[in-house]
Length: 398
Image (tube, rainbow, N blue to C red; front, top):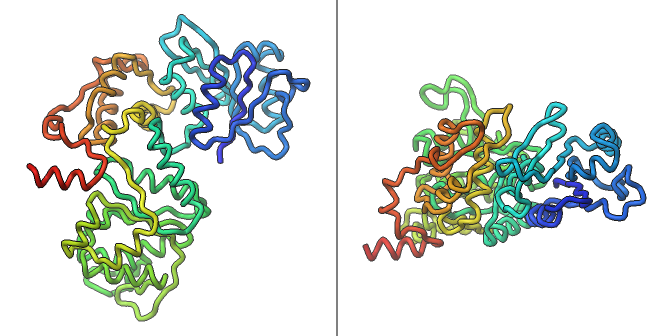
């Protein structure tokens, strides 16, 4: 779990930053005020494993400048220093790297701006995979963290492009298997006649073209986590074999004669209403109950507007050039993003931001760089559903 030291001396955003860090399950070590031991920020670091410190430029000067701050950070085995300065002349927020990125100096014009706080959070914790700002999304992440520490099978239901695989990866990252493989297979993308061999492996000569043996996805994920993406697309004949594997924790390679033990935590996703698929005899009821031990639900992006900017920052960071800080979205650009209904969910947002990166200048994205494809908006004006029951009801009416 990430840990961040926040020195509150003259740091106007301290309380707001601590709040956003704690909401996302980051351990905050508060330091500074009334310190009798300024060399260690007034705290005993024994027992902590913090790697980042955030402080103001005023505090930096108070303790003797950047060289003194770097020296203290090294003693505390910190790897990242973030220094924040109020600067009304900067355009929103500016980030500059020093010492090869070990020190990040941030100029901020409005310490109450939520978007700037999100950028600072991303600078503090760039490896957090799941971004959130919506209250219900926080609740979803809280549930996910609780179930992550177990080996319970999790079934994630949600619309296409709503972040099901990202949530699955978040479960793995917060599990006891986080140092073992995370293997994802899209059941809809593999030909039906190859899916069994890909999942369970095959022996040499098991079928035409099998010139070598292959251990398969289940054994590749041994000791780790296996994600069966869009499992509702799996043919019924293979569902029975999958059920046996989940029950007995053994696989039999195609063409093989013996069972092989596997130790795998299974996650599954679907963009369909699985209960409806069961009722229509397109999905096995026994497999449904085996997979649906702990259900989680992702939602359309249009129903969680507060997630848009945190996700946008993460996407821009992902696609940005390595030698640049995350591009700054102007208020006009942010307004365009927040006012669109995103029928394609996070995937559409990612496409839009990739286009914006190409069109932007000087690491700033303005409204002229935001080209939104509105061809599907009218089709989806009424499709901001929070549940699959709503979608089915809408389909019947129309």
